[in-house]
Length: 452
Image (cartoon, rainbow, N blue to C red; front, side, top):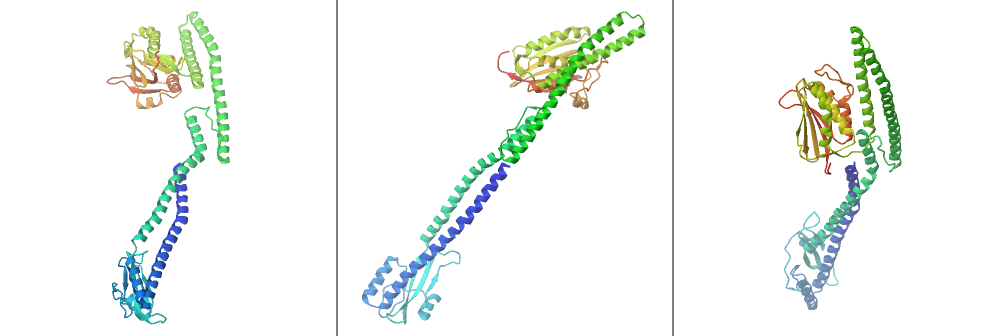
């Protein structure tokens, strides 16, 4: 839009320059022609009077005037004044002057003028109308051409300078006019990225001010509604945890006091459902807190947190004979930018999923690789992996894959991971394990150059 405004502004200035400058240049050119023709004609008339007078003093004065023109004066010889000057070439103009007594002007070209201006005037005897000769001045137009280039060149340079200034002014004016629109676009971009607190300044013409107010009001309303929804989800999840815990304890007590296998099986099934519901409620609570973005990212020691979470998960892995190994750059102390608690929750969810799908006796490999401005944490398992269709849905809320153990998750694990990683300015991706079966979860976080 800025380019279109600048082009329109420059075009308008160009039209104005053309309307005011070009006619002036043509007028000056015509004036130069007329002034030159008049001056040369006056000189030719004066010489014709001297030639027609015929006296010795007049002839001497004619020759002196002719010398001032550098042999550009041509006269016909007369009995009274045999001036020693070149004779004109017989042509139509000379014949017209001698026969009819009519002066002629020849510019040598139909376009502006040629290299020479030729003016031929008749010379009449003193006191009579009898034509006794003719005077011709061949005037070089080189000086006129130089003057013509000055007239048009000056205006062309002036026009270019004016257009350049107009373009600079046009850019400034266009940027000022479009600033409210750019501010609205920045707000829309932030809004699309999930920043519901983005607002646009109410500036510019009345139309953009009205649009900014409307968008700000809509954003405020939407932010309020989503905040209320998050609060409700968080409160509901928090309130549900206590009765679910109590219900699980009650089911455990019932199972301990029942001898009937069928009843015990039903109780265990109900307990499993309560456990799954508890995990679902916990996931919703974590997701609601993550979307609230109540904390800011700060430098955290990546390897310390990774080793801590692996130590927590190793007992569960040992029960099934699964090995959890840490590989990669384990000598340095890379730090990453992450909100407190986010990295722990990411690793817990990814390791939980990896352990869920790993076969007994398998290996879960965790690799830490600094890569310039980012640090990659990759978790590789030896499970069945995912198809491309499953990978495309894996980050959807409540989508659940089936692990080798036959248990199903809440469907919020990877959704929580993506939300937390995105809040910390990182990315998460799912790929196949190179050269084998299994899934590779790659978490990329911003590196911190401060010591962890």
